[in-house]
Length: 210
Image (cartoon, rainbow, N blue to C red):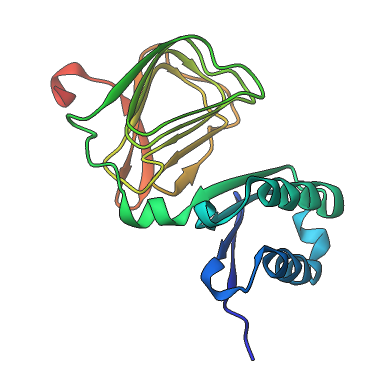
């Protein structure tokens, strides 16, 4: 009988694991089932980024840390990122045009992670190895060289804009792309958004967006 309590969705960006926590008796059973399922193709996950989507509110923080430790130690993954399925399904942020906005004056450095549940305007840079998540738009008055995730709980109208757009990863509402490897970027602001199911990057033209 097929076990659909844990579903794997692999792509070139990594592995997305969807876990229905309501179908398990306890967290020990979740961890045991996840390890068992991953073990069948253990070598495939070495150096990969694993995204785990589930209702994290039903999990203890210690168990979330335990899952990460197991994935790092036994499967040698590169990173593990949790996504709250309950929030994604029920609370999509709709205020990308006129909603709550946070202004931050700082640089997000390598290894740091910054999250906000609305639009984010960052006066500074996002360095390589840094991660920024926003439920709405991400606007950076500086350079983006790390990973940015706009519309993080599902709003496909969200966008990412920066004076210098050189991200390691851009994700908008679950759609992911990487920066070209030639590292040749134009000397003008750019904006990334979803069009026809893919992320496009185009020059920021004031008359077009205002």
